[in-house]
Length: 125
Image 1 (cartoon, one colour):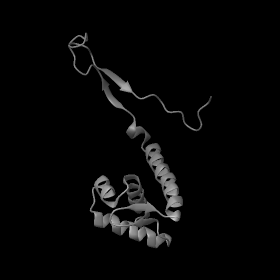
Image 2 (cartoon, rainbow, N blue to C red):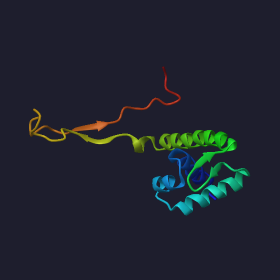
Image 3 (cartoon, one colour):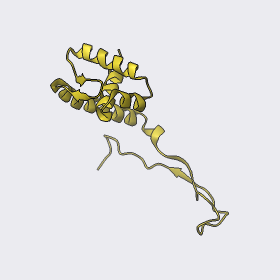
Image 4 (tube, one colour):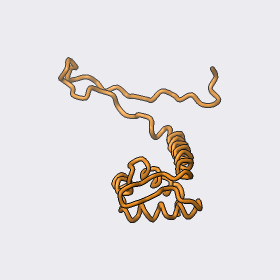
């Protein structure tokens, strides 16, 4: 079991309020969502969600666990963004979206764009 993926499934189920909603959000079958949740509950050793055919309700342990999952998933997303810093910076050429309209002359030259330097941990203030 991929625990990070299972945490995403759990968080999506809580966020959407149903297994079907989580399945739609994650583009998976409801069966796959249910299996991931069962595996996660088996791993942590407690029931995280009280499930019926019509409702989905967090257990007491689930209430604590969803907060921890949120922290982990946010930290993971931030780590990905930090690691991909250059990759995620805007790059390319700036120019009018539609030259010749809105007062921009048709022969407007495109301007190279370089993202501003990010301040690193060793930047001098």
